[in-house]
Image 1 (cartoon, rainbow, N blue to C red):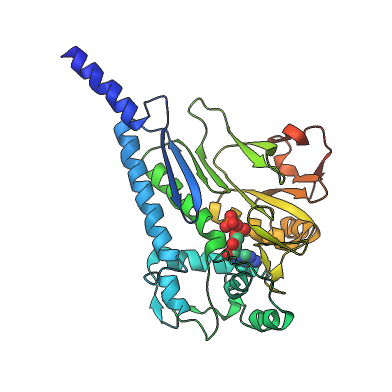
Image 2: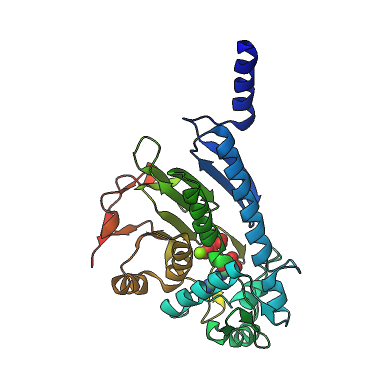
Length: 336
Ligand code: ADP
Ligand code: MG
């Protein structure tokens, strides 16, 4: 009997891959990216059940936000329908519009027609003509999205895409789910977004690597209860006639943002804020990003320049260090 129960325990560990001291882990492809969830739970069974619930929530949110699935609320709104938004989508859209306003439109959830024109939605890349771009920019403007309670009807030609904030918001929802279940230690990697709940089980901070634009790592961050979100020109791009075109679009021009930045990493309490601001500050470029931060200092950031320079805001002085090939380079501290 004892041998049988021992065998059961070993089998359970092999099957779930987790124990009280090891995290329960789940890997999945969703929202166009590779995700890993690691949760330290009371028991393997509790951990597995939570991961199952989390994976279900990711799929549900993916279905609600998809721009290509005819069943999604966003798709229906984009195709001329007046839609009653479900609570999570209404809440996300409201918060995303607030970020668009705060960033003066550097983040714009209606930039989709321009993103599509460059082929970033299908992978069939092309460089649009100037006339095509100026016509498309006419259709871009988050201010034209009117949300009346949960009712959303978009003006002719306006299309919504919450892709720039979807993963950050998903991180926030998973964090809430885990916290409500009594978890005090979890780490989620949702593509370029990392979100940490609490500390590691031994009480030490989580260590999160910051990618170097050319591959490998540029730095390491030590964080507790934070979201770390990176937007980089090297993540999705194409080359034509010696020019590089990246997937982050300046809503003012309809063209890929070129501000001399290789990447922007935001460290914030919320994944949604981190995600929206990483895109927005990339579009702004260094000078405007600094000015924005001085006016809204409830987050920190790391800028890696195309020229190989690195700068961080003062809140990260104690918890960030350059790493690998970047170790030993000057690290500028941006102060208020
Ligand atoms: P990723 O989702 O690739 O990690 P981001 O969070 O920076 O990167 O979001 C970029 C995506 O958001 C693009 O693929 C595009 O669909 C959309 N997008 C591009 N530029 C903007 C912008 N200025 N504002 C809002 N969304 C944008
Ligand atoms: Mg983003």
